Image (tube, rainbow, N blue to C red; front, side, top):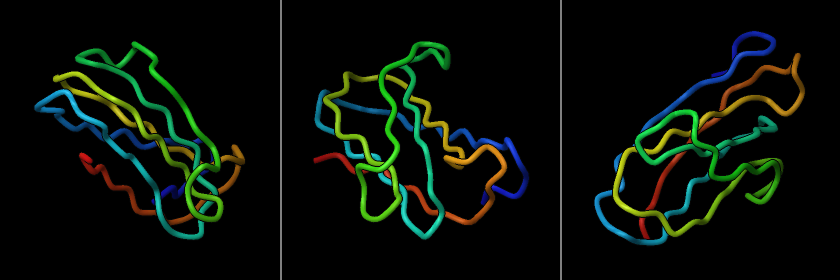
Length: 90
């Protein structure tokens, strides 16, 4: 849930093998997603605004093993709202 203006949430996940991973948000909040890693929150990989359903974000990337960090914020800096996020290995 993005409860305040300029808020962002960070989630981490461990990629255990080289594979394609899909990271997607869900809900009615207009999310913006940034992916960093592996093993470093400051190493930028990619970002997305509206590639998912509706105003949701989605990234599909081949990742190597390691810890990855997903930062989610509202597209509008003053926007708030609830959302879901999932990571799937495909």
